[in-house]
Image (tube, rainbow, N blue to C red; front, top):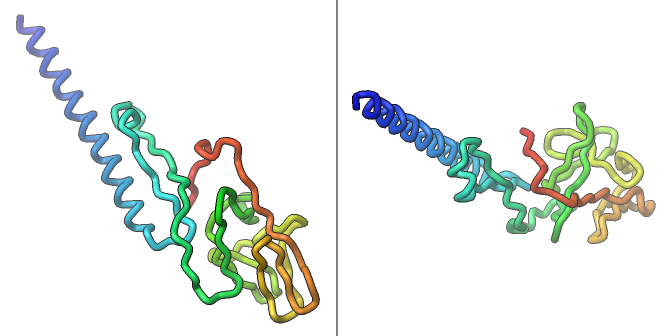
Length: 164
């Protein structure tokens, strides 16, 4: 009889610990979402009921579109549907929905972290003035088209993982 009481107590403790870990994961998820509410291109993470009950406590990314805000910067762009911009980083090509772009000192289109934005033929470098990015992704200066933004989509975006 004593053994059954002990097992029940241990199972109860494991249930409490598991519930506490699930709540900790939930609070971390909420904190991250709130901390990044004003981050360009940020996609919130959500925890579904079935994943909250599992022991691995994984969340998924919500890929629904966010608000498009006019910034006044003619190099800022937004994706109206699916897709990601390609960015060259020291770790290789990465993908983002953050379209807040600028030019570096060499005239290369870069993102907020200073990484090169990739076009269909590699990094996009502008040599002229009066630079704009058209709705179809063409980057144009006073001399004409200098490149096309590379926008890619993934068959299974739910398999992507966040970095940074």
